[in-house]
Every structure is written in C-alpha cells, then in structure tokens.
Amino acid sequence: MPNHYHLLLRQDNDKSISRFLKSTFQSYTQAFNKKYDRTGKLLEGNSQGKLIDDENYLSHLCRYIHLNPVDAGIVDDNEQWPYSNYLEFIDKRNGTLYEPEFINKYFSDVGYEQFILDYMQEKQKYREIR
Image 1 (cartoon, one colour):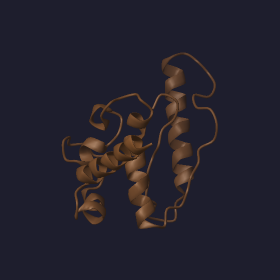
Image 2: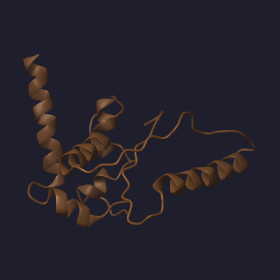
Image 3: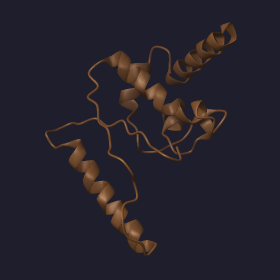
C-alpha cells in the first residue's frame, strides 16, 4: 500500500513485538536517511497493535490484509501485488515470510486460495444485489 502497511506477527516469547518493531524501523530509518543523505522520520503516525485471540478473526485478518490492495483499487487481482506473502500462502512463490504450518492449521480444509475466492464471490454477489 502506498500510505500504510500491515504486518501479522506472532509473539512466541516474552519479548515485546512493539520493541522489535521500534528497533527494526529505527534501524531502517537510519540506513535510509544515510543512503539518501536526509534526516528525520520516514513514517508518520503511530503503529497500532492488536492482540488476536479468536481464530475466526485471525482468518478474516489474513484475508483482509491480502485483499487490501484489491479493495483499494491498486491492483485487479491480489496475485498482482508483489509486496505481500499471498503468493506464498497459495504456494505460487517460494518466499520465507510465512509459515506453511500456519496455513495448514487454519486453511487446510478449503485451501487458502479458495478461502479468498469464496469471499470475493460473496462480495460480488452482495454488490449485485445492492
């Protein structure tokens, strides 16, 4: 997305995700500023974090994140957006920013690609009714 990003992270230990993100983005900002001979912030606003403790919401959140560029009108198909791990989720790209075990656990019954397609078809039906 040109003006924001989404990260879905799992915390596996007592170390704070917010500290991890702060450290990561501070380092990135310093490197970016050094490379482009600039100073100051790169990102506006504060990050938002939310504890996800409901599996249905977790599934919806994955779908929301992967369909965000389509819903924003940036691409026609979420497979066209190279800045997400959707292609890894549907086994069409071999990246490292995903866990196959996660996909198998939550989407093995229908498959993630079908999960997305079913939702898109329902949205289209709803638009046609309105």
